[in-house]
Image 1 (cartoon, rainbow, N blue to C red):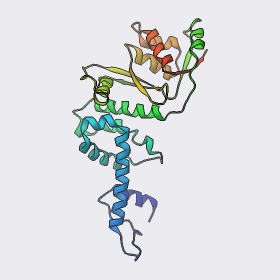
Image 2 (image 1 turned 135 degrees about the vertical axis):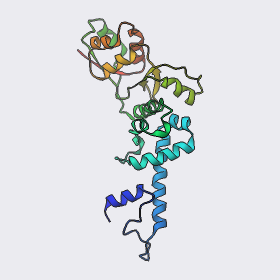
Image 3 (image 1 turned 90 degrees about the horizontal axis):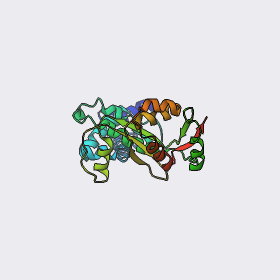
Length: 243
């Protein structure tokens, strides 16, 4: 019996018992293997439930469990670190017919995933506000801001943050419209923030390593630059400046 055959049988509940799975008397042991198979599926399902709580609430526990069973068999873990298992779920949801009527669901999953990624990201020391303000006194167009590993951006044509707040914090019902969400982790826990008009393009440029001048061009004339920079500074997001 090869490891590949064993793993494939674990993921397929209809698969035959792999050769070599026997009890102490040397007889085939399908019930023992079924227990192991079910435990594995349950563990992966619980990992997905913890990773995507907003998605789970939107579709319901039973539907989420059934959906997770299909996903985990199509996308088994590639790493021993189950804390980040399911990173490809948002993209998978885009082609999952039973949720086609919930067009916002993949982006809600992306927000759940970004919150998880931010939580597990490496620690970093933010640039002191005084040092940052001193740099801004000069010509800022050519500066490049280095952001913390915990900074994540989700851009959506749906009100993803409003949906997240309504389902996790009891906020008001969302109203239609796009939202760009910035995830910051000034302490131990990440927090999502709605960016003003142009803020998503600006932060995306920063994450891509572009200069402030280039980011301002991407954002357009309507950007409230002081508001976005204040949010980044307050959230400990800026860890360095390259001139």
